[in-house]
Length: 347
Image (tube, rainbow, N blue to C red; front, side, top):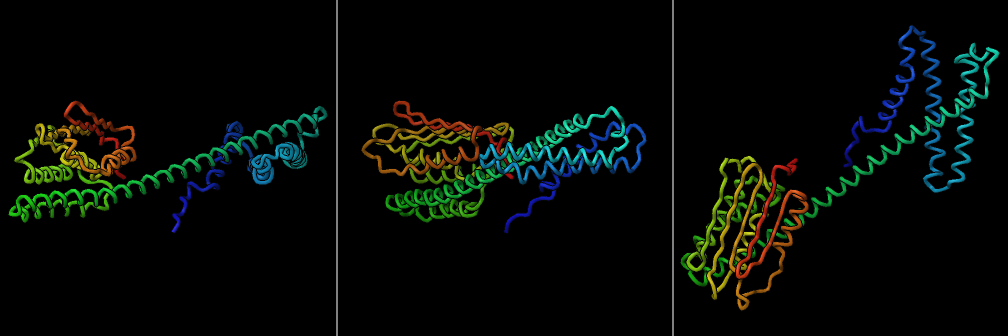
């Protein structure tokens, strides 16, 4: 069901405010001195006629300009202004201020030109309001459309990332079951905890930062159980002000970097290592992941979906407030992420 437009955003509300402002500004000098009710009514009627011809111009003449019928717009616009000025002069002459026109020195043509200027100004003012309002609505529609597209992209990426994570974890479990089958039940329980966290947060756009970091710690603990004897694994988390529980983060952003470090660091020719340092202070998270380069002979085919998704999600969610650097130096692979969580809108 379409959401009803709020009353203060409706077109008639803008026009009432605009008309009231013009009337008050027009009558402000007269409010200084006592005036009769009839005087106010006459001026109000005159202003209604002036404003009305601007509205009629908007609905019947302005479309010619929008359709690029410039000659028709120019001719009909001039005629419409002349007719409007003539009507205002007639109302003024016979009803609003007939005493003024009984004076011998009054030049009707001069007053007619004055009304032409009034009509032109009112049309210009009303069309300006109309164009500004339309531009604002189009901009709002564009922003809503972009937001909807971003949300759809995020959900799509999230849907891709969950199976990707489980696929890697099951591969890990399969490897342990072949090498050390006695440890398989214990690892199944740990995997169950990891999967439970995943399933509980599958439909969430954000999760608590402290819980996400606990999830990462559990994942690293499981990797230590699997390859800890062969791989040097270091993990350090610093939160000096103990403020991580006050912030939230998009799920599966950090774990992807950790996953890739373990998946692509295996080597038999050099030291196999994975070092992860996470620091959090004043709403800014800094994550540095160092891992050994994988041997060419051990490289397996990779979809690259992990890093591709994390780049897209960071750009969608934290555009302008993150930095992701991936560096290859000699026999070491470095991934550095700086993420400002204080700028993210969680509404």
